[in-house]
Image (cartoon, rainbow, N blue to C red; front, side):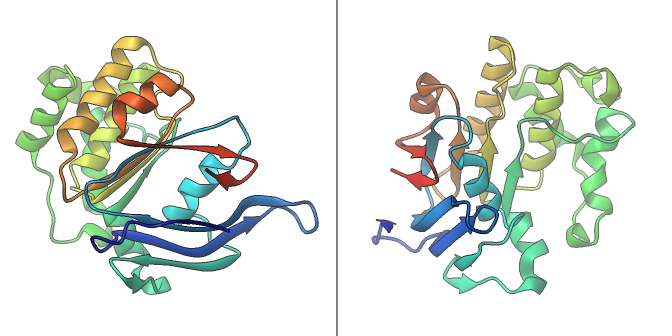
Length: 226
């Protein structure tokens, strides 16, 4: 069993003896893990394909349930009814973003149509500031999502998340298929969002990127976080 704790401040997310099994009898997707993610943490995870990196991030995002153990947010167990609120604070960004038909602005406005964001409203000025960080002009808002390049689609997905001010970002190889300019844009957006009250976990196939975007690195092999 692994234990990786920082005890000098309360964790944002705490995983207590969590694990994920493959099909019965065929092994582990994620071996039993204890882990704490604290405010100000910038963590990178590298490792070979199939080692469990995405499994871990999806578990931390509560997109998949652990087979054993418990997740806590700011010291509290997360009841089923609180999962939508948890996902407001803990945002998972996939390698291939899911976009809606329509314009970039339609995609950015969509989260505010959901019940979990009732009481919040789309703030165009804040979005334009984020797009400026990524080097995108005002006219980017009117582009059709179906016409965006892979890098542009990832910038849109990230801005869509960041406008909601999450506390934690879980980034699952968001730049793996992007050109160098798009990689810089995504990294700049994350850098502009980050502060000492927030935390991020960035899964990357690129050790050099892992060093750039984090202050703590782990390697994952066969479901074990080292």
